[in-house]
Length: 421
Ligand SMILES: *[C@@H]1O[C@H](CO)[C@@H](O)[C@H](O)[C@H]1NC(C)=O
Ligand SMILES: *[C@@H]1O[C@H](CO)[C@@H](O)[C@H](O)[C@H]1NC(C)=O
Ligand SMILES: *[C@@H]1O[C@H](CO)[C@@H](O)[C@H](O)[C@H]1NC(C)=O
Ligand SMILES: *[C@@H]1O[C@H](CO)[C@@H](O)[C@H](O)[C@H]1NC(C)=O
Ligand SMILES: *[C@@H]1O[C@H](CO)[C@@H](O)[C@H](O)[C@H]1NC(C)=O
Ligand SMILES: *[C@@H]1O[C@H](CO)[C@@H](O)[C@H](O)[C@H]1NC(C)=O
Ligand SMILES: *[C@@H]1O[C@H](CO)[C@@H](O)[C@H](O)[C@H]1NC(C)=O
Ligand SMILES: *[C@@H]1O[C@H](CO)[C@@H](O)[C@H](O)[C@H]1NC(C)=O
Ligand SMILES: *[C@@H]1O[C@H](CO)[C@@H](O)[C@H](O)[C@H]1NC(C)=O
Ligand SMILES: *[C@@H]1O[C@H](CO)[C@@H](O)[C@H](O)[C@H]1NC(C)=O
Ligand SMILES: *[C@@H]1O[C@H](CO)[C@@H](O)[C@H](O)[C@H]1NC(C)=O
Ligand SMILES: *[C@@H]1O[C@H](CO)[C@@H](O)[C@H](O)[C@H]1NC(C)=O
Image 1 (spheres, helix red, strand yellow):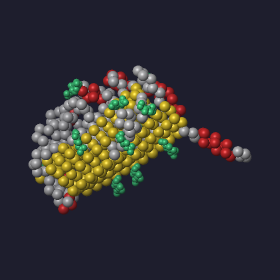
Image 2: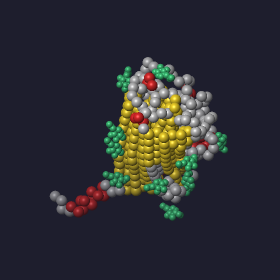
Image 3: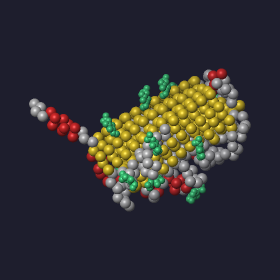
């Protein structure tokens, strides 16, 4: 019998009390072990706070256990080891989780940065890696894996070593107002500094600011219902789907919308890449309201992606390809970088990995397709000029398509059809 319901309620509330853990910091030592020793006590109904006015030494990887109703606040700065060998040692170890900071699952997890411009930065000391072209045992920055109902907000990354955010296996995550600054101080190229890899379902990315040296966003196998909008990408390799179908993999990407994005000095703006001989399909993908500034390949679709390091472009007409269904490129405006002799910094081979045989450099759109594997792919309302003032071109092989693509499908001047206007 309940003789004192008020007291009982008080006990119930206490049982689900919120706790706050201020991550301890000590000068000159790795702060990860103290966090790891305590974190299991704060895996539910808790705030884990890297406090302001503190620079935390994240000198070894952090792996969070599955979390429920937890917010992690990065209010202070986080710094990676400055020793390349130290980082490589952890990344090369058998128990490496796959990212320098890994979230391994849970429900209702928020990761929040600091809006104070001086604090909340995560410094990867990437410049020294770029200067040395050091590409052995590089860490992924952040894994936000297997989280249902999550938020990543106001996070700020400075000079990451390589790849930044990965959301594999996560569902219903809002990723907004984050900053990545992976620009190099000199001509050393920030290789593989991909911004966001969108694995998972029901992901909304908005108001993110990315300066980097690989894909700004890439949507990967298994992704469904992904929106990326109201954002800025500089120096990147575009708003990408893929690569899909490597080694014949059966891939699936569905319902993706990219809209209201500025692509500034990027190599590509909108891009699809699948490997020769892949299987599966990418279905219902729209890129719209894209401004591109100084971009060599504004719209680029290839079902014949390959690795520059392993020899010439493969020949294949007998294998299957990753199918393309219902792709729309709409409302693009900007300037094609057709500066003669322009070479983007990631080019380390001759010809470059992004070289397109037969292209003139004036193309606003290139569809490099296999026959009978792309249906309903359309580009419309495309307004472009070239930097040199030469006429804008298109590249498209009419034997590979079965319906109007919105422009005359040939290797020649870009001429919209009625559908493309
Ligand atoms: C951080 O330092 C500033 C300036 O000294 C101070 O105003 C602020 O209260 C400090 N914040 C915290 C959380 O200690
Ligand atoms: C989800 O986590 C937040 C803290 O980030 C918390 O305020 C909220 O109560 C949690 N939601 C539920 C349903 O527990
Ligand atoms: C990984 O292995 C190393 C060496 O065996 C050990 O010192 C370290 O604590 C392990 N780390 C984790 C996160 O288990
Ligand atoms: C996510 O869950 C899958 C399936 O259980 C598992 O294979 C994978 O390792 C998990 N990923 C992470 C980051 O925990
Ligand atoms: C978004 O991030 C910027 C830069 O960190 C910050 O100045 C701004 O206050 C943030 N906006 C919101 C709504 O949090
Ligand atoms: C925090 O880190 C950023 C990036 O490294 C740096 O610019 C900033 O000065 C740091 N803040 C403080 C207060 O040291
Ligand atoms: C960039 O600067 C670093 C340090 O001064 C130097 O070692 C490196 O060679 C430079 N890279 C290029 C491509 O100029
Ligand atoms: C798609 O994802 C968004 C963002 O997470 C969500 O609000 C929306 O309900 C999802 N749409 C469908 C059809 O599931
Ligand atoms: C196509 O994707 C968009 C954006 O994700 C979505 O709103 C729409 O419902 C999808 N269309 C179909 C037919 O699934
Ligand atoms: C494009 O980037 C350059 C620096 O590379 C910058 O000066 C310019 O303001 C940017 N343009 C826009 C529209 O953001
Ligand atoms: C090629 O892939 C598509 C899409 O997955 C599939 O429907 C078709 O059966 C495959 N064709 C062959 C010959 O494997
Ligand atoms: C056009 O595509 C067909 C079918 O794949 C191919 O045989 C032909 O060589 C292509 N033409 C050009 C100019 O690439």
